[in-house]
Image 1 (cartoon, rainbow, N blue to C red):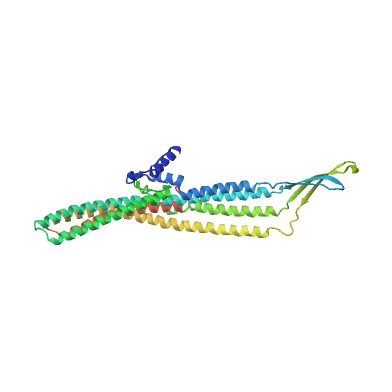
Image 2: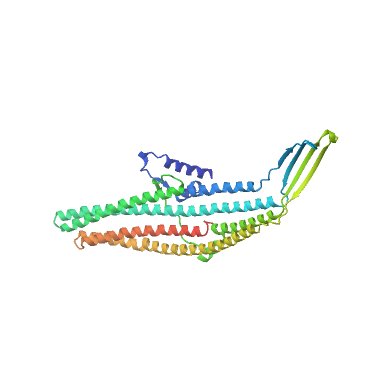
Length: 406
């Protein structure tokens, strides 16, 4: 754990202390490193952990005893000096019920942190997939621009020797300009995706981040029905169930506060010498009579909040089931599309582009056919990258619906 934290710290330091001269240097990061950094430095998690400290302090606040009071008096007749100490007695379970309610609230806050981490993990996984996709698209666009440059040079030579019309040179030059514009756009998308990933990793300027490897996605997943069975243990459902228990504990606290409060008074009176210089001691126990305030409204409020929590549990289960089903089907569709594109469509498009270019060199195909074949090849490659990234994002949604990996 310390080694992982040190690696994340060094990564964040390298980004934070990068000089302008090194601003263009890439900082490769794996998905595991990104997730470790997010768990340590994600802004949303930092807020959630701060709330944990407040909730923990609330338990001690609930257990604070009321202060005793001391009074002193003097008179000109009987007692020269009188003193009284009043001690509140919290002995009928009020303090214990208050602390139990505070602990239940603390447990809910702890699960709030789990929910925040679940959200941050999904966002980090999606941002990493977006960065990997943007880098792949940028590479494909640069490769296409390189091909267009070589094709333009070849066409210009053919035009100069009179074996191709001048129109072909204009067409290929227009395609070259479009390819260059696509490269600029794709490069900007890489910077934007890197900055988004850096946000979740707690890095102020993450534009230099680069995906080190393909996002990790399992080749096979359990059946959907088996995953649905895990929804009741998801972070969101557990949080709502904890809030229900907290509402019940707060209702118990209000019932305990109906019990009468008591006050013990201990005092003395130092009498005048004319009364034999005696000292009189006294004790008094006061008991509250709870007839005007039975805290019924407070109890009803907590019961109503408990019903709200029950409704939220049902809503969380329904939402989780819908999110899981949609993500699972999206994952299946993206998997099928990615396999078809990479295993069948892209090889066929590459072969067609090569054959069309050779046919153009022999004068058997028009230039427009070459340009179309190259465009289809690039778009097929980009579509394959997008399908693989969509698969990774869908798997992140599946994990989010389940409350995280097992």
